[in-house]
Length: 160
Image (cartoon, rainbow, N blue to C red; front, side, top):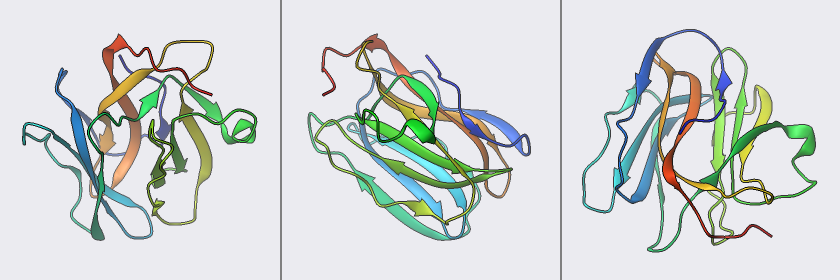
């Protein structure tokens, strides 16, 4: 399942394969923008790296029984009305920055720069969330557009 994403229309299309594997790490290459992204799973396998090789390489590791749950995209004006597990994206014609929140309430660092309009891809307390499994979007030397790719199974975890 995929939800609406954020960013521009440049670059070529990419999509991580559908999987039932458990996400253990997200690798982000970034500087003033998000240059690249890649997922690593608990069995050691990983997706292809999307985007370019610029910027610094950053790692966001997930603990066992920790996930990033998502459901819909909202304009960031609503960001403080009901926070639950989220993926935040700042974008214009490219993805400027990303940040993740987990089911344990942990936030990743903000990867990327300070530009772009903020969007929030987040769980909705009125619906069952789905675990982030990978990404799809558009990329060239940077990530131009990004959607989250989620599990097909609904989570029983409730957002508060």
